[in-house]
Image (cartoon, rainbow, N blue to C red; front, side, top):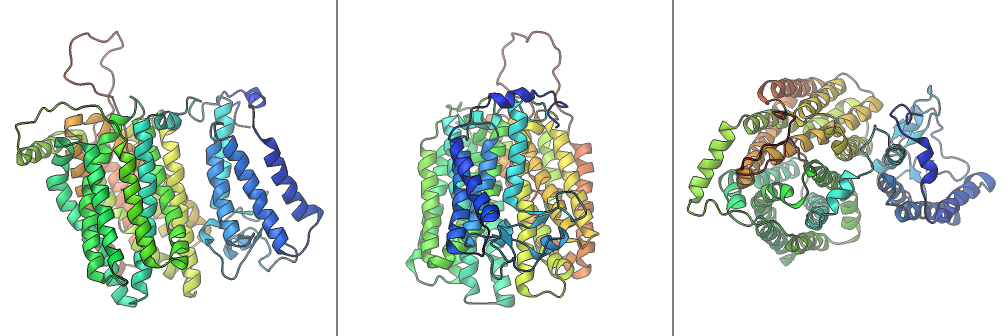
Length: 603
């Protein structure tokens, strides 16, 4: 037990008071009855009982959600319940994972909680990981099981006061106690989920009318239509607007306009590709207004020292949407017509606007009331170029995104040419979903771990360390064709990805004066959007000149170069000038010390 090593008090576990324990006991009794006492073939009654046992266990965790760390277990239990219910009471297992764990692949004689299914639903949430058969306790497990294991570790160490995890003050919970931030968090949760559902609905709609090169070209144009205008508009106009006008009102306006843009898709039964292009431009333009306003607002709606936790929560909900949104979108597209799905996404923006309407921000000093927008832009540009920290972060992150933007297209080629060479389309799609889920799960876990890491190491060190870890993981994948190694590497890289995002965002938020923060984040988003487009072009070039493994090796090497560059160009962490009592001389504005953000720039 690691608790004593980290100076935790095991006796504290006996002091925890759990509610509704009968829910957990009933869940265990049902599973014991179904699988051990009265085993038998698969029937509807057994499947319903098994799903019901997970529902009871999930309810138990929900009732006791205030126990530190238990909410992570609740997420894992919920993911398992979702996939088991979708597959008629059986957890779908990946054939490769069963083989790696030395477990039988053939259909079991009696009802089993995990099995290979002919047409699994949400396979990326099933038993896709494996403990090798040569290891003790070999078995297969799911992303939900990973969350449950991590949650159990966090809960034990938090309850016992171990130094391995943050103290029981609960940084994430403290950030959510601020009503305005909780509203921003809820708005992001709703709109992010709607965005991913919308993306899948658009792809599904277009795939019904075109295929092959035409479909690929149309989807590429959609990306360019959304990203390119956002980069230009964000750099020239969004930043000054976020510093000159009410950031809350700008976010509301952006949400309303995006809701109206998507609502236009409801006016026709079959929107044309050009209609989708126009909507994509609107989403990009108003997204460029929303994002810097949001990131500049976070330090205004949480307490001092809670910026990292706030960014971690925003990042976590974004990554959770990446994992849940496509699955939910697939379900909605298969049961509803596309227009209904478009309407749901428009409604998600409307709900977000209503939530943000209740956000309260402190009044800002109108120190630039006589300046023009052009002068604001010039002032922001000078600040970015003359400030070593901001200039260094933009330089490092542009190199990072240049390399990281190649991951998605190269990943598809890697799955086709290396991991599933000679396999059919269905197997390739399943494996691609699994490796994508491994990265997404890692990002979710990395977001949750960021506050604890930020308490132990300076943000600058976390940033360059996380970039190096992602680079090493990509290099490791470039040398292997082993599916398990790729999943593990992507899980680690995803976690480092999130830590890096949280680190650079908080650095900019906590070190930039409030009156310049909007322009700094607008410039950052513009640079990252431009790097993303360049990286997407580079992916095509690398894919045509090198084998996919070689292209991955180049991408990983560029990431390692970015880590070295961060060590060179980023100034060291701030240190207090003295340890005596603070001077009583007046100051122009308060600074909050070193800090971080989240979002997805490295992914």
